[in-house]
Length: 357
Image (cartoon, rainbow, N blue to C red; front, side):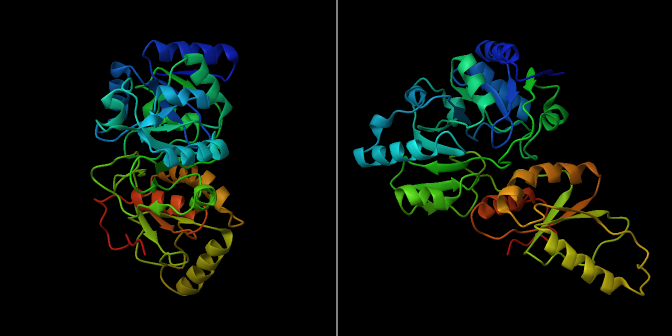
């Protein structure tokens, strides 16, 4: 079973030494908890794939603690001068932070970390514990989310302990992650600058710095960046996704316990009122209401993103068969939240309620 560590300097140094020795360390970032391994150690990387049961065609993100360390992971000389300038502008404005850049890789980064691609995914996290750990390790750290492949990403140390506790060596408990969804992945290596995965940094902030960018709006079976597979971030319960304000009022039974996930308190209140009117005087009038949770009572997309995985973990722990969730407004962090909800449905869960419109 993994050993829990604190964020004390001594424990951080111990975890850094463990990474240098090829062990696995789960640690907090501002987005979600990562499962860290020395990025240049193929044996350690193989342990990451084994621990997560992650397909080796899904690339990993390499984390650094200083901008100067970028040169150990990426070879910017392979980019045209105007593209290098855009990369530098993004780094100056948005690093450290929830932005992963796809760049030409250095030969020292193993193909196992990049799924054989000529590019590497790299970011500088904003979390002080993550930065301190990477500095203590003295090496770039490859770190996908610290959960079994395809399942809910962890935003607390206890999520990691529950899901991967017997497959990792150490877990640093740095409290709850502030952003709550994974980083935005921006491909700077191709002819077109493209967002491959929406995440904790809104598209609008990127475009304010470098101008319009393309956004990939579909998942692929051949990912060039993490989080592109069509089924991902999934709870154990079946998840059905509905337009905002359109979670159905009926269609389940006591033999199929369900839970509802609403965007804001106003949406839940409207649903509860309609549910009460519908069932007044019917045989189901005495039936218990489904469990429900609200991503953000006030309708803040920032708060909704931070709460998303936390609440999905909470609902999953209730043992419900099905989670009925509604989309959030498609602005700011909304695309990232909706992307995670869409992928949480899973391709195998083809029930009629699985609408993404």
